[in-house]
Amino acid sequence: MTQQPGPHQFSPGSFAEVLGIEEVETGEGWARLRMPIRAHHMQSNNAVHGGVIMTLADTAFWRAVTTLLSAGQKAATSELKVNFLRPARGDFLVAVSRVIHKGSRLTVGEADVTDGEGNLVAKALGTYVILEQR
Image (cartoon, rainbow, N blue to C red; front, side, top):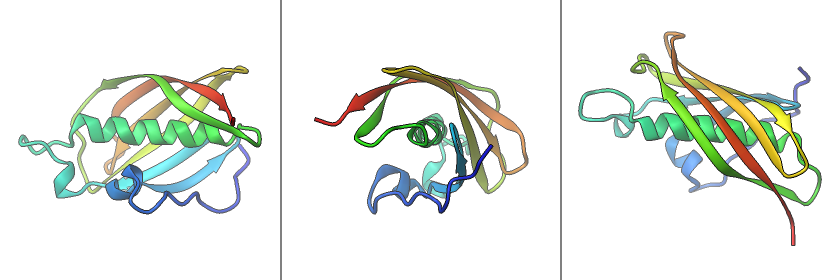
């Protein structure tokens, strides 16, 4: 896995930035992102909300896909499935995503989300559509 220079900066005010998602490292077809667990990420039963975990997985997958795009191409989520395996523990979540297949129009990938204790809390599988700039 080759590492890309410099972490991606999420746009100020973007959903990823508001959630506190940070890029740790990326390479060709893969990405590792980290997100601190904050009080507003929690459900009433003191577990991280599934939508927050799903967003982290989706964002990691998006970053993995963008490492493979050509100039003028963009990508958007077409389908995303997440299996939630256990409640998250600790102070942060980490998502590691990799592209499984990149076609000319569709890209398939997966993401594993672990908690601060190293437990696998979710497994995501998704499809991104590749869009040409108009």
